Length: 111
Image 1 (cartoon, rainbow, N blue to C red):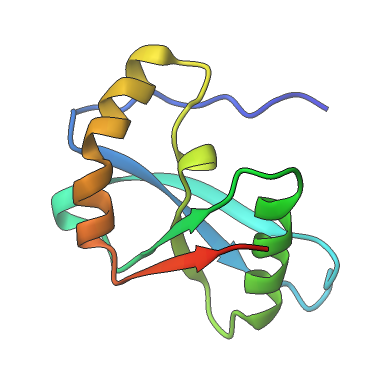
Image 2: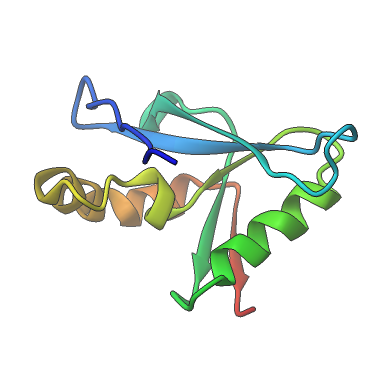
């Protein structure tokens, strides 16, 4: 399986959001997509704060996908920031305060 290929941001105020959808035809699969949006004009989204423990994020995504009556938009640092790109990671970390502030709600997941 190949790894996800991140696209570069077009400006310094862009973030990525994860769109989570439940697919009744594949109830055990995750249906996720990632897209860019400007932080100041982004659609309503939630931000996730969680412990970086193995499988913790996957467990959260599975729970959310099963409970999502409609597609849900979530910002998750481990997914929405290209962790392999040090320059992007630095810029996105600098935006994290604004990301959490702009979120409709911050979800805390401890596992």
